Image (cartoon, rainbow, N blue to C red):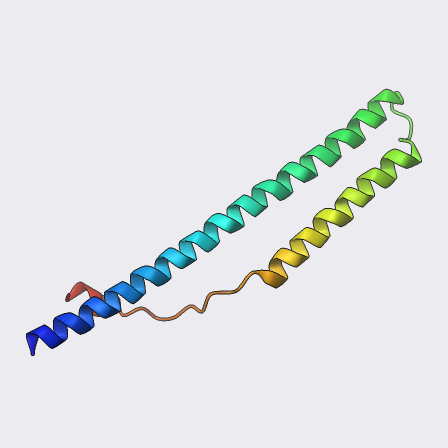
Length: 102
């Protein structure tokens, strides 16, 4: 009996560990993507600010505004695609008490 219980406990522990590792990698992917989005947003805002400064506070040129708007649309499209492709991991109840007994 004890060997059967140990085998089951080891199998549950291994499944739980693998699931935890998968979810951790998903979080790393999400953080990297968020960093990229913030960087792109920062760059497009800085470009628009530079254009406004070059024109001494007057309205930015239409080309600069169009470039900013195109950048925003591109970023929004990237975010929507990431959300659509990102697989939501099932939040299963892990039997932590059973794992502690192993």
